[in-house]
Amino acid sequence: MARTDASKVADKSKIQSGLLQPTNYDMLVFRALNRDLKVAGANDDYLAEKLRDELVPVRSWCMKNLPGANSQIRRTSEHPVWGIPGCVHFVDARTSWLDRSVKDAIEAGITQVVLVAAGFDTRAYRLHSPAVTFFEVDLPHASSKKQQLVQKLKLLPAEARAPTYVGADLSEQDLSQALSGSAFSAACPTLYIIEGLIYYLPAAAVGALFRSISALAAPGSTVCFDFLDSAALEKRVKFAGFKTMAKIVASKNEPLISSLGASSEAIRAFAGSVGLTFERYISPKDMAAATYPAMKWNNKTPPIISFFNFAVLSKGAQEVEPEASQ
Figure 1: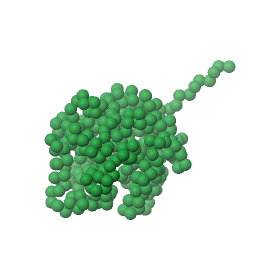
Figure 2: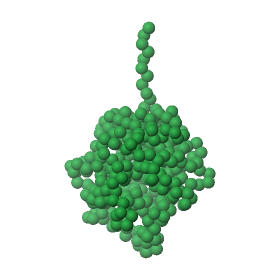
Figure 3: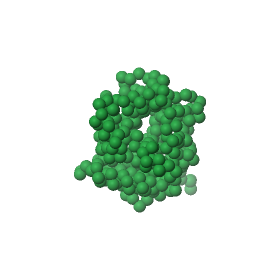
């Protein structure tokens, strides 16, 4: 379910001709870029390069063989006038944050990780643990392609447990229905990862997704996700690079259409509306400080994208109705 409805209406002829490149291909390039440049604070996704080389071979060849190509790609992508300032570092920061979230959850005893709209996520292959099952939920055709890539590129280590691939269109069925028939246990606390997704979904679909997680999740479960600041989408605040990004993704029929308020109060209210508990809101400024402490914040050229934010929700213990007195 990389983009649900947006995926269905994408102009495939333009994508296939190379005039447009799917956004998740760009994310692969960015995930590998700072690692190639050996930037301090770069993410640990050593498998992104393999996927990039397979899916965007021409660009990969240029990045590997043309002197200065990697630096030029980053300068162009993050240019303050025609680029999206902080976009490469944003992908790094988001990847590292979610990696830490998975590691922390596993250390805390979580035995299930559900990756919603898994796309080219590699955590099941990098962060595997004998006691943990990863569930990769995506559109059927995307799930099939992912499995073929995993086999071809040998992404799964011999000692690792293969993830459970769930091909499902979550615009047609909820997460509980999608996971039914798999080894998923609704009785076990679970970590749910929703990365780079909800700003492409209609607001009603966003609410439905989180409510389905609330209905499915066992107490002790956690949801980590990133979201678009409503002040950007509603044009109440001018953010560096937002207009450029909005135009780019719209040209790929992946428009930015949903947002949330960027504050603890707003996320707390959203959590309550979908039956979950607020745990944490992380601003882009705080995320940048945690990932790139040596880089100072500047609204015109922020270290990471300034209009995307991060949040953690949880499923609390269910209330028990008191027994009626006899």
